[in-house]
Structure formats: structure tokens, C-alpha cells
Length: 172
Image (cartoon, rainbow, N blue to C red):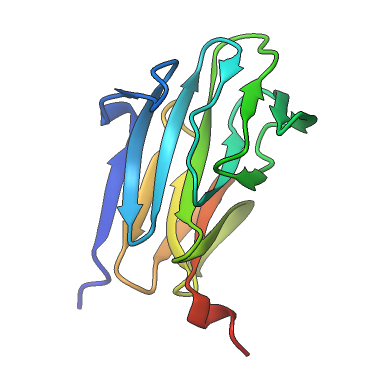
């Protein structure tokens, strides 16, 4: 008997495209109804692109840095997600060396999302709201998505779980 079909997306195999504002590059890793997951190359201080009507979750992968979100400095730390409205002006203020970050962008009217970093060992089956798992213990992150429920055998390295909630999932 075969298990659920999984889609594997090696971020190193995805061609980078320019940011909306043309000041950086990103790799679009996975797209669902009302949301998208991408991997941004952060090479220099400067403004992020604007995404009006959307919410963003930003997850630095290797190094931390300061983001100025709507005039307020926020310390973005490695493997700790930071959320902010897509229309808020965001500026990467300092950068010790080039790095990368996962970005989850959700259409506010359609769904909400989160990037949750965890370490799991053994076989795990996630609930339906976990739409993908990003394996972070590799030189290029690997996205695993597939039929519900998503089941993987993990060895304890860090993963980013992509949580997507539609409005009906928030109702009691």
C-alpha cells in the first residue's frame, strides 16, 4: 500500500526572480489559494516590497538583523518569525553578511498564516492546516508538501511548518 504523494521542492533548483520593487531577489517555492511561500536573498540593507491587503511572516534563516517596520525597529532573529502587515513600510536596516529568509504572504481577506519552527524526531503526521514543511538543516531548504495528511519521518533538525488557516478554521 502506498502512502500519500509528496511534492519535494529544492529551493536551490528554483530560479530567483526580482522583488516587486526590483531591489532584491526571491524564489517562489509554493503557492496555494490566497498564499505563497518564498525564499528571499538578503544581500544589502534597503526597503522591502509592499504587499497591500496581505499579511507577511518573515523568518530569517542564518543570521539576525534589524528590520524597521512602520518606523519601529524590530530585531529579527534567526529561526524566529516576525509578522507585519504587507502594506507597512519595511526596511532592512543592517546586515552583517548576505543571508536568506522565508516569507509567507497571505491575502488578509482569504486566510491567515504562520511559520512555526520546531524540531521533531521520528514519524509525525501534521493536521490539515500544516500545508508544507520546510527542512532547514540543508544548504538549500527543501519544501515538502502533499496530500493531507502530511506525514514525514524526521531526524531532529529544524523545520519550518507552514500553517494556513482559512476563516472557517477560526470559528468555534
